[in-house]
Length: 393
Image (cartoon, rainbow, N blue to C red; front, top):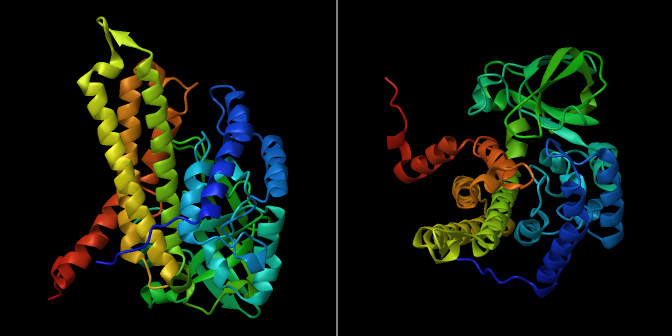
């Protein structure tokens, strides 16, 4: 078991506080002014917030400094994002894009030409992008189940296939698409390509889902991609992507903690002003225990997430730690939000409050970036070793 120093630098505490104030002052009022059935902040609001965030120095803080970002570590971002995510439309990108849009993480391992052409403009200019891995029937095991193909023909690759549940594809400028370049090599036969959204043969269809930010179906019909859009070498798509998976799972865990903490704050304020059968809610043991349990779950989730972030920053690799953090934080905080909605009764269900929105977001968060059951399987294999795997005849 590894132990980590969870000391938070003074300047990061201050940055987190200032960003939290920005969220309360600039983002929340815009969200509260929207009709109850709004699914996101309007583009004009996001643009106004981005201008303010740039001026305040809050722009793309997680991106490497040498590429135009803030250069914050995974641990520093866990501290900052917990304050930045305390608003309604915080999943999957805090601020609903107010603080910029990170590029697909695999592109940090791209060529200099690709970084200059896509990564730097994404960071500096706020381009949106998408990451297309999942296919129908292959969400939990994409490496072995991907059927989208990329066939090399001269100086280009021709992509054919269909991706499902792809976030941001409808508003993106480009995306990274994972396709099979070798049918016989399993995960080593999968490559990653940068594909412009307006490439002929690429079509996008929205898929309504439980959360307000819908996903998309992305279809490739003889989509031609220049050979220089291949990220790394053929067959390296998953190997490059896995270097960066831990950091994004930490981000998901942190966002879950943020909304869990905020839901507990709202519920605590609510019960202080209510009575039932002549007794204040706050004096009822059932209410007190629900809040106490929520507090314990949030603290446990935070420490597990901080451990994963520290391990990631150490360069040792945090595959197990990030699985633990993502699994526990999304499951525990889903339960916290559900419990706080119960304390608030009808008001907890009302669309004028953010809890029902977070409830739906966290239901999705238990599936994306690795479903909870897959993370449990990964952890079980770590404990049991080869005994957890089927034996071959």
